[in-house]
Image (tube, rainbow, N blue to C red; front, side, top):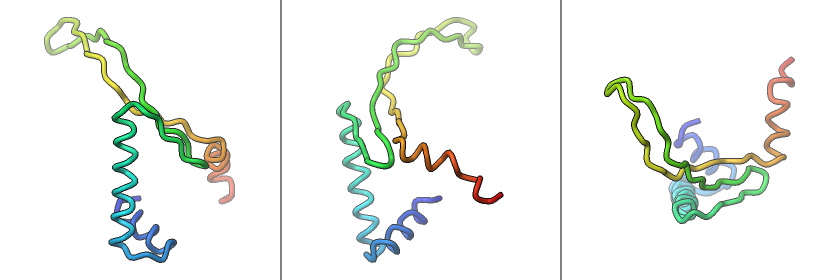
Length: 97
């Protein structure tokens, strides 16, 4: 699904215009991004929890330079699906049989 298709479906199901829906979706993404940038988690019922995790310094081998290098620590986003979403994903495809 593309961003445009998402906006179309949300606009259709909510009865709002595509412009209003796009603005609301952009605001929601902005709030989610800002919370994750601050290191806070965001929990959405029936979907899951978005959180931040710090990856420590890693020692990796570079074939280009033929030596080991250190990758600096960084924060990454992780997602834990809710049990409702896990249950929905379990049975996808079994209805077609």
